[in-house]
Every structure is written in structure tokens, then in C-alpha cells.
Length: 182
Image (cartoon, rainbow, N blue to C red; front, side, top):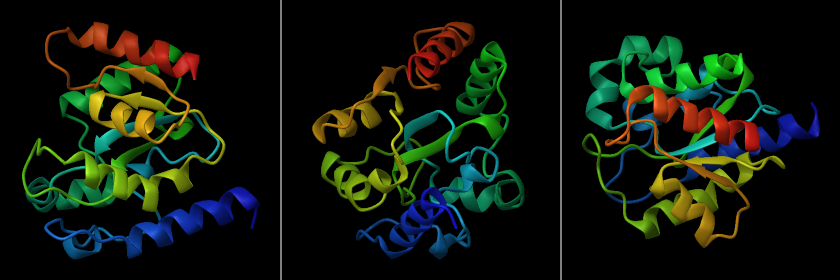
């Protein structure tokens, strides 16, 4: 096993061990697997550009879309994923060419939950920093950027794919530009 693969396996073990009161784990909801986040089923290239967002998904949505998520690790029709796919198309990349992960490795209790900074920091310190593998990540949105800034992790900041106020194409363009810069 390469050093990269060994270090990634360590990140998976750390995700499995990480717990915070009030948040279900992936295992609690039936999504344990050989990944840090299920989105890595399709976007888990260890040496590819790295995109970090706030979280993977909330527990109720994970339950509701269980079959799709077990196959693909993400929900293709959401604004977040449609913008990511458009950004990748602008760069001539596919999901298999990149690595996507959240700063927060647990599930939230409801959609678009506010995750306190202390919880995001705890999660990234316990799990996410082990996924960097020498990469300079792109922080998609304020929540992930705040964690990386607070911990002194060099990164490129960009808009969250689901951000309001800008059109679909502009969000995709900004994310593509950030991925190129990283």
C-alpha cells in the first residue's frame, strides 16, 4: 500500500472513531464505508484537486435518499451538485478527477443546519486534516473557509455551490477558477 493510501485509510479510521454529542455518525445512519464521506464514491481521487465544503448531508435527507446515496454518494439534482458538475465541465474534468470532502464529518439533524465553529474545528482537527495529503484545498463557502483559516491551512476560497445571490453559471465559473488556482 502506498503512503498516500495508508494516510487515507488513517483518515477513514479517524472518521469512524469521531463522535460529538447530538450528531449522528455515518455508521448510525447506515452509511459506513471505505471513505471519509460517501461523496468520495464518485469524487475520491487522492491526488486530485480537493474541494472542501461545510458538511456532506443531513440525517433526514440521507434516510430519504438512501438508495441513490449508497450508489453514488451524492444527490445529482441538488443545486450544490449541479453547480459542481458545471464547474468540472468548464475545466474538462469529471467527478473521478477530484476529491470532495466536508470539514464536518458527522451528519446534522436537519437540512442547512448551523454547525457551531467549535464542532467544525473539532471535526477537521480529528478527521479532515488527515485528508489533505499535501494538497492545497479549495474551501467552498464561508463555513469551510473559516475552519481552514482558523487552523492556518493554506487554501483557495470560493463561493459555496448553493450560495444565493449569484446565478448558477457564475457560481460554477467561480468554483472552476478556484480549482484551477489550487
